Amino acid sequence: VNFLVLPYFFLDKHQYIADRIIEYRETRTIDGEEYEILWRVYPHPDFGIPRDFERRLHRAVEYIISKLERPVRNPIPLGSRRNLARIMGEPYSGAFSKKVKDGILKMVMTGITTKKAYYNKRKKVWIEKAFHMYDKAVFTGEEMDDGTIADMNYLYLSEPFLQNINASYVCPIDYKFLRSLRPIAARLYELLSVKFYGHAEFIQYRYSTLCKLLPVKQRRYYSDAKRQLNPAHEELVRKGFLLSYEWTPVSGVRNDWYIRYVPNPKFAEVIDISPATETLPESPDEKKDSSSHKIQDLLKMVTEKHQSKKTIERTIAKACKKYDFERIARNIRYANSNCKKNYRAFLIKALENDWGLELQEDEEARKEILQKEAEKARKEQELYEHKKRVQAYIQNLSAKDRQKLEMQAKSEIRKDIQGKDASLARMLILSQMEAIISRKFEEKKPA
Image (cartoon, rainbow, N blue to C red; front, side, top):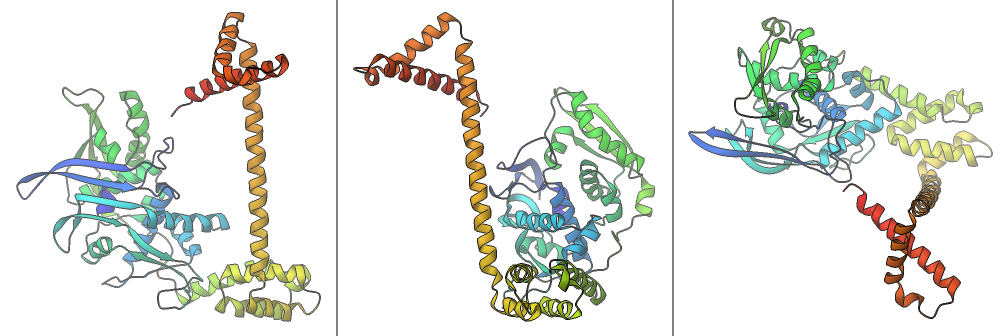
């Protein structure tokens, strides 16, 4: 419930927040005493803030967890990334697979601090703690804690999160319905579902509070605020979750409004908590299907004249039981480039000794060199264009302003031009004039 109510995934795609924290504060009465509660989410500077893709990925993880026997224990078997694609309703591809890995790592690296904002149901306390939602991930082919090689993707949940799952501190979610919604509507559905679960006749939020809980950027003007949220409101009404919603002014407060949400009682009668066609964790047949796709993907990398050979297919199938996908792929590429005869025997030896690792390192080194050269060329082009802009700016100055600029340049390099011949002194002055204008351009750049 905590991760349905509290803000963790940043949804405003128009606002850059890569290195900023998400913060939520409110005053709450606990056991008759008033407290200021505080919830902060700290993105890792190298991974960025979790966004809508990570939100949808996390809901898929929650669904997987919901199908496990209690008590749930670490590590959580996620199955294959192809299976996660089916749950999320996404087409599977190499790009999707990378997004899943990056998304999980992003959530592993995102920090959280709570001051009486996060409720631990097992201990029945509002905790003050620093933690992560996910503690660790082990991907297919990587080494587990016990030294074995992971046969699928595994996730280790943090203690506060795991304890609440085992204490059944959860709210039923219609995953199929959730998957059908656009990002802000989906997040509103998550938040309001928790409040409506107690059979509330309505729930009312300030707009400013909603912006912190979703979270999205708070708009200053009423028309902009309605333009921001009403498409999501209308979607939830149209699809039967809300009966109605209403904006009303907050007395004596500018640039903030109440939004009252009335649930559709019929929606709870048809809630469907099975989100997809999958039953998790993967069945042996699904594992076989996933393995078959993996073998076929690897077989396509083999040189064309060997692709149809059953001996090669059996070699790759056997290798899939021992090695991860990347190791097999790089050694196929190595065999393609270096084998002169007896492809199968060469490939087996390459796999056993991982000859392809050196090739991969060479490829990565070449790629790094090319990236550095491209970056160098880009910077040189930027410098050239910048110099052209500066020179054009100086040429367009009035005679009076140009004279002022020249006097400033002479003043700044007086010692450097003393004793120099006229042509060299002139060159130094022009260079300093360009440096002065460059400084002005830099000062005008937004912080």
